Length: 276
Image (tube, rainbow, N blue to C red; front, side):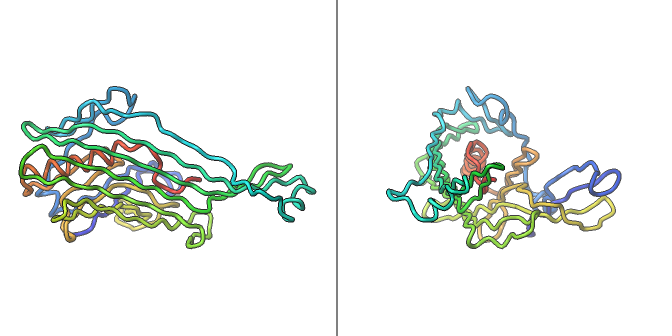
């Protein structure tokens, strides 16, 4: 199965000031054998949200508050470096911030029903320096983790476990120029112990103009997630245009699992990328 191609059409004027229309380039072979579904209920107020796409309906989402904690990492003793910085009215601090969110819901398509339980967490470590001329900060590392349990309500179906993880470490970052995209490690999959579905973020800075010329954008963009089994695409979550594609040849139970994975990923609240 061909990989996804991101197509950005530049319509008027020069590239730097043109109106841009972005689309996920779905491989022709996949598109010819898949169903595209527009997502509704994704944006707006989160209270009593009713997410829907195609024949899939999501129940009222039970969710709590996003819990966040953070503060400076204080040492019990003042170091020589800290004393020196105070002489010049400089305050240098290491700060750790943590956030947590969880939610649950059911998704159904006619007779098929699945319960979905989700949790996401972030941990960010940064350093800030306060000077008489302003405050300057830098992210040292950032971890995002997302897990979900998908429980189809049929006798033959085993529970599925979703794991998605992003990590940024400034020591491994090769982005040195202003517009360089930071290096972020990704890993994601869903499994029931027998079948493994890989989750692959589609992040790109390659674009194609109306004239068919390939150019690069100033920064990379997250456009979609690809769901695949052994490299064969079974689903696409288009987060930019709010569309979900599901491969037609899957049986009804597997389609429900793909729909549950898609809805779980779409309803996350926390930022999975490296914070500014």
